[in-house]
Length: 572
Ligand code: HC0
Ligand code: SF4
Ligand code: SF4
Image: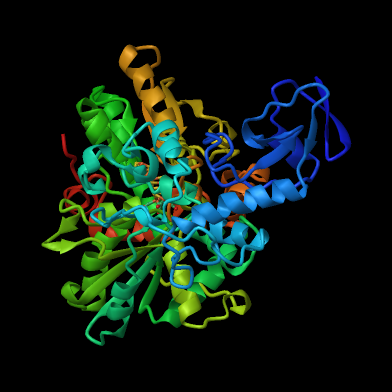
């Protein structure tokens, strides 16, 4: 232990603790911009300066020592921090009123807290570009404050390394290697860099205008579907606590926006279990292409295509749930309703920006029509609700429309890491054993441990070894274990985003300081698991509308019709 003083307060902390960590533990506020807990700590922004003796030192990199006397609130410290932020602002494209991050920008917030009223150092600014080549992520270099949070996230959390530092001094910027366009790199479109960015230098490619246009077009029948993870996060955009379930309000808001049908992607998550579960049993019988790897996360799929092309045959051929649902809306549903599928516009509300890339993939279409036309993030939907002047908080709950509005708890839990595996285990066990599961909660695959494992014993004595990874660095570890023969798995679930879709790149952006105190992934997952618990049906194969869909249209899982609408192939 180390004994020292901050602002006259005596404290004792474990060896290795930084002054910043120690100060925050006792409620002393020190500003930071580049610091992102467990991800980025380069001591580059200097906003966290403190005074120790005659020196000003960055507290995030200052390890506490015995008898140190730290001062965080002297005129010298306040002036120095102000200068640091003024310098950052002097080289920042300040478009605060029109910026996508207005009111949720860490630089704007800090400038206000430090009472910065004028920028003393106006002059030449570093030139940069706006790269909007990607379907998912837009980069505006002139808003970048060079904190490096995106680089650490992409490199260390995701092990993708699509972006990095380039040049030196005043010309320093963040860019893909050789200044390539982001769309030409190994970027998997996960958007984790977006939610790591403190300012508006990274954001999603917006499709709000496209969706308003479709809604205003009298010729179009506009159908919307919502992903599992959106319902436990969108409330944050309206001031509700993290993880608050607002499923019914969200359905009501979508109807008010003018969508002709409000469907739930959770229905197709149930359907995925039927298709993917059947696929797994077939592969177990033939022993081919094991382990079966989930295919519902487009960031993960692109990661495999780029980095493990020899393993693309292991991916499930199932499209992701919202793509399945889009294909069914333009076939089964269109036929039922007597609507020309060409006039249907399918909009998916997703916690994800990789889904924008996915819906643009040519192979995800049927009969010449894209399965899904537009993907909006949770943030974009909240924006539309605000733009329409809808009083979200006071909306009364409404239900989804059928036939794609009914889902089981198994469909809901897809939104958190481990959910797909748990949903699959619930169904596979019952279908094979013909017995009712006494407890449906497979807690071994829940939570945010890096890699989770579970074994289920089938009635015939066979065992299924399942692994669950979230975040691509963990996915890489699992794949390396499989390649080296260190581990044998039959089934692997991967979600590219740490925590799964609840923490997707399209979710409400949480300030870095809040992330130090709460685990966003766990808070939102609580909402997901409570919805699962409250639903009368919790196993995908019990969904009556799924049974009806097979009777009326698909015949059986993995049938020829299923393959036409619900399955796909990959790039090697
Ligand atoms: Fe997900 Fe999905 S669970 S990927 O994370 O499988 O985006 O929420 O919608 O499609 O259902 C995201 C979330 C989905 C899909 C589902 C899957
Ligand atoms: Fe890296 Fe994901 Fe950002 Fe692409 S979207 S640059 S893979 S963090
Ligand atoms: Fe999108 Fe979910 Fe995959 Fe993240 S984990 S890239 S949110 S599908």
